[in-house]
Amino acid sequence: MITFIEGKLDHKQPTRIVMNVGGIGYEIFIPLCSYEPLPPEGDTCRILTYHHITDATQKLFGFSTDGEREMFIRLLSISGVGPKLAISALSGLPVHELKTALINGDVKRISSISGIGKKTAERIIIELRDKFTQGEQLDALAGGEGNLGDHRLRDAALALGALGYKLDAAQKMIKSVTLKLTPEMTVEDLIRLALTK
Image 1: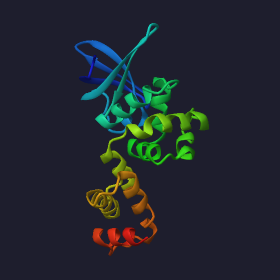
Image 2: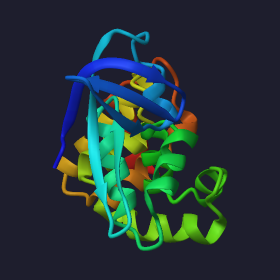
Image 3: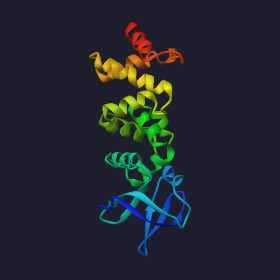
Image 4: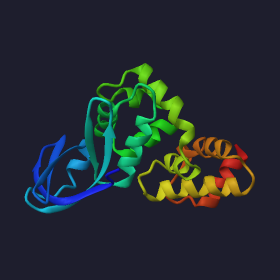
């Protein structure tokens, strides 16, 4: 399996690049989210890869982060989702937004991606929703944006988990009070509010 390729970025387009490694040009297909971080043509770069092999073809798919590649592989595990659709999904939504939409069962958000209809979106959600770790589910609850409010929501859900609540129950409790969230509120305030609802 080819895990990464490092060499000169010979050519780049929003959906594909060509890497020159020792005089050999490797064509690599990429999602839009991996295009922006690329250096100018002619510079050296390293791209993470997934080597997709079928009876008919072999293709390399490239990613700028482990999270992008991991989501691509998760999408490929779904019946009826091939590399083209997986790349389209990663091009349509940033990884953290796609993950949040999957965990929250947001069919409308996922079906807004080009090439993914409502039925496909529902199938992707059903097959992937339970495969995310507890940490990923808590990040989805927090929104994945990394601002103060997100950390408070995540921390409050973790605290409820430590108090003996199951993850699903803790998430629902915190979601029920998010509209009342103010900049002054602490994690303790959120927990108290969730416990009194």
